[in-house]
Length: 180
Image 1 (cartoon, one colour):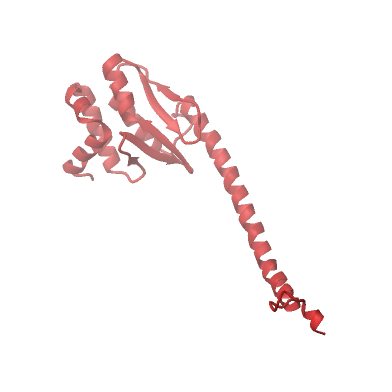
Image 2 (cartoon, rainbow, N blue to C red):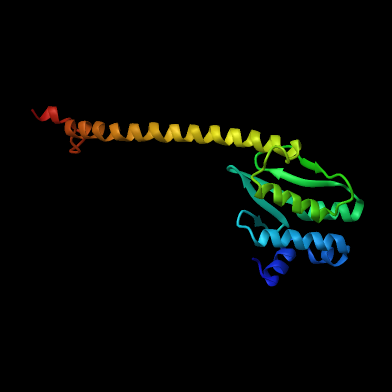
């Protein structure tokens, strides 16, 4: 369980102080839930730009907390800002109802902890994660095949070099057969 000091530190990493100071009560409660969930898990990382990063297979999925909360508090925008590494398009998750932005961020964290089940992940996020994961898996397979070929070549390369060295001398670049 995360201590209250850890939870407060996480809150400070999720939103800048000026925005924290003007958050309404429901947003603060949601932020507390979000920070507590992150403190009690080891699958999340928070960067210095107020983003939460986690993985789906080997693909990094990011929730832009500051942007999401700022948009909601300042203008009522109901979208969560997300990104998937190597996906060029913006990814937004439309939130329905009157939930605070921090509650929606909390739901994002719970989806990640649940393993990103298709039944609860919005399609605007699910398909980019799956497509990038498929490309990532294909790239891994290519790299593995390349490493195997390279290892095979290296094993025969030694034999070839031994043969070459047995037929050449370093003395003035002459062939060994020329000495005979």
